View 1 (cartoon, rainbow, N blue to C red):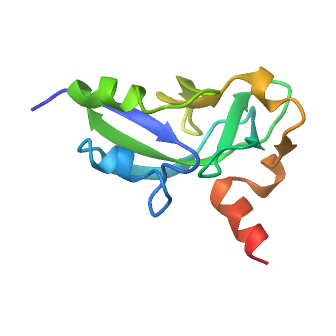
View 2 (view 1 turned 180 degrees about the vertical axis):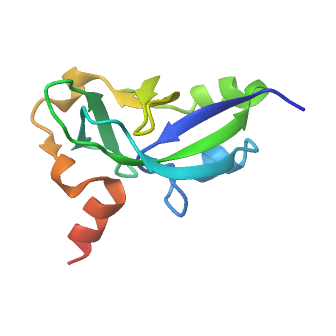
Length: 132
């Protein structure tokens, strides 16, 4: 069995959204829909096409963010990484069950003046609110 890496995605890489193909084309498979542990904020990253969120760790808050966990063959992880555009990056994300996985985070400097969307609970919920 090939070695795999679990990756948490909280925005445009989720199932049915514009960048999901970057996972599926690298043989990633959906594992679960879950949430972060408390202590995360979510922002609408300005000027990104397609639109996407930026998630940051903030131990002073109790909010959690919905996300998806995917499993990718470790041999494809490098090809995935080169597709990730700044200010997004991969770091360690703590899940609601206490486990940790690698996942999308955002450089805090890029979020100055960005709209915080944490109160929606996640990216899909935020997008649904904009549909009216």
